[in-house]
Amino acid sequence: MTDYARMQKMGAVKGVTDGPAPGDTYRIAYIIHFLLGAGNLLPWNVFITAVDYFGCLYPARNVEKVFSVAYMTCSLLVLVLAVSRGGWSSKLSYRLRMNLGFFMFVLSLMVPPIIDRTWSKKGSNAAYGVTVASVVICGLADGLIAGSLIGSAGKLPKEYMQAVFAGTASSGVLVSILRISTKASLPQTSQGLRTSAHFYFIVSTVIMLCCCLGCNLLNKLPIMQHHHRLLSVSDDPLSSQQKFWTVARKIQQPAFGVLLISTVTLSIFPGFIAENLKSKLLQDWYPVLLITVYNVSDFLGKSFTAIYVLKSVKRATWACTARVLFYPLFAVCLHGPKWLRSEAPFVALTFILGLTNGYLTSVIMILTPKLVPIAEAEIAAIVMILSLGIGLVGGSILGWFWMI
Image (tube, rainbow, N blue to C red; front, side):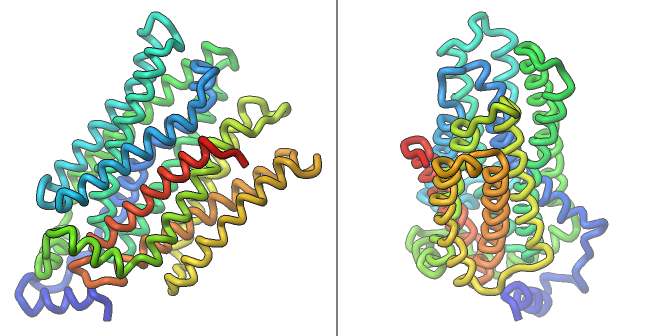
């Protein structure tokens, strides 16, 4: 019997539940978790997928690498502060944290088109600085939402965690489709590129507002109210740092696995793929298409966990370790025979990079909170998202100073 099943039985004994659990009518709770997962990573995907637009505005800048370091570092900072201050729940309510995070996302997504339309000196250092500042705000919001959303989903049945991570992957696919459609629908000129990017940012902002509405609806659903009442039976607020480290020691193996996943991925994607790979045939479409390939494969990997999840955390961790082989594989394609330096090998490697990232990340994040008692599940989920954040920062820094 799982911890959650035991909680259901205990809740029934103590009178917390009144009869059978309400069903998830039309799977609305699952869909909203999926939507919130998409909203969590959509702004990040919006910024990195507009590589052609920012490359046009700031041609002398390493835009993708700067964005990666700024975003990931700020996200990690919020997560570290949350842990060091004794956890989320003792300070701000879940609903307030989520609403604040989505407001910050909306603010950051409005900055690039407004600057481009109103700033007198296009592509100036000041405009670039404000753009990077918007990425910083985006990163802070990501830390706020990711810690809250994944921490909450970690205490619920595993399908909700799967929904969150499938949603994060779907955001990349959605953004890629949006970017390709806006880019292809207008003339391939500098003005056409900028107009398409403005429309792209506006549509992304509207999606963020929809996520905010979904967040406020979620806790009003009978199924979610039932889960919250049930979990209150063993509710033990995140108290001391000692408890945090006790839980961290229990799950150190999967925490290392997810750290390694994110380090390998972020040291290659998006910086190396967006800035170091060139194609005479596809020109500025090449990085956009490679990012799309990655996002689609990442989505497929995370969605496959709805069908099959590895049972062994140890095997999943070893599979994470094996991903370091991507370094020599990309190096061979970059410096090897001429036929390997063509577009097809890089597309294939990028596809496998995204597929393994999506599947293994989702597997480990689903399994790990279930390795500890239900009262420690939220802490376990926060340890995992913190490990993920450390890996993302490490990978983005490695991708800046080290080239395959």
